[in-house]
View 1 (cartoon, protein in one colour):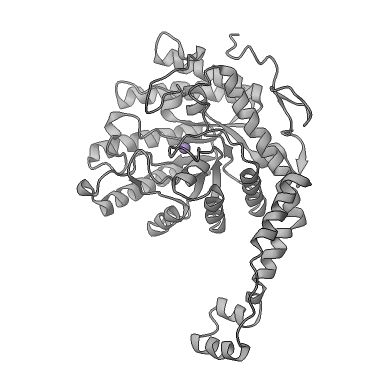
View 2: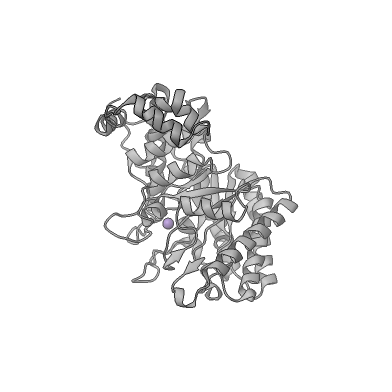
Length: 440
Ligand SMILES: [Mn+2]
């Protein structure tokens, strides 16, 4: 059989922290048990089909630069089949359990809705066979509702109901493909669901259109037997001026307003968090506190460049906080850690794809070990419990449970006198966190 990655003859193996082999894991050991589960079960790594196999290196200043061997063929379907072969070879050699796709990554758009549907069905049959042969699973699917010119003014939020209907067809088929491939999630991310100018935008109308589409998607999927989770991926802007799913808090408000909270969780992307002028950690905290942190895109942005650069992760502190958040909430049931990362424009070689993913997997494996210790020994839990202890009993508890009033609180405050100042101890806790990161 043809091989697309001849540089990697055997699956990437764990060789331990001292290895100098760039094609080996130093920390990721899929079967190693941590806190009762294997590393593989905790981390649920997924490869983003679009960046890893369909990325071209294009950026706002220039077109594609990569010359991938699977992107050469006699027609679009031939290329799609070759890409799928290359993808499964990559999944197996890297040893990742999951992948994620958009409909148009895996199968090309045809000359009509029916033709596009046939292309997708054919590729889904092949993907289903390759999943059975390799044991690799689909984490989630989604529809690309932003690349085609018809979506220039939005998909579900487009002012033309004919465009809305095209999007409905794509969503219907992408959901059925996800069900066929036993994906545990289906993602919405509104690349063009927002506005570029308020002068031509009815914001109330567009948000209602988006909610109507999501309700129909849930209805159809459940009717087809989908037992998985729907995810919305917040992103504040780019390419539009403002997207309706701006950040985690805004998206939770949208889901609550339109009665969609039961069927949806959030898929939080690191680079979208920073694009919203938040930290990844903040977005994870907001989603997790609401019980709605469902899946993660573990890329990173570049602080000196305002774009959504989708680089591979390399920040141990951020990765550790991420895994700490997941351990605290009991893990991810439906989602996983999807890379959603792309090699740089100048990284032309197919082997660069391995280097990017190996580094990211090792980073998160190491972060898991640190986070596990931080969670077991609980220095931060103890500090936070102590800080809020006043609300666990007495008047604090009465206030939280609605059993007191402003007048009673005023009387109590007068009896207590001026409360003593209590340090937030931020520096002490930063040092504690650093000690776990670098010393233990
Ligand atoms: Mn991104």
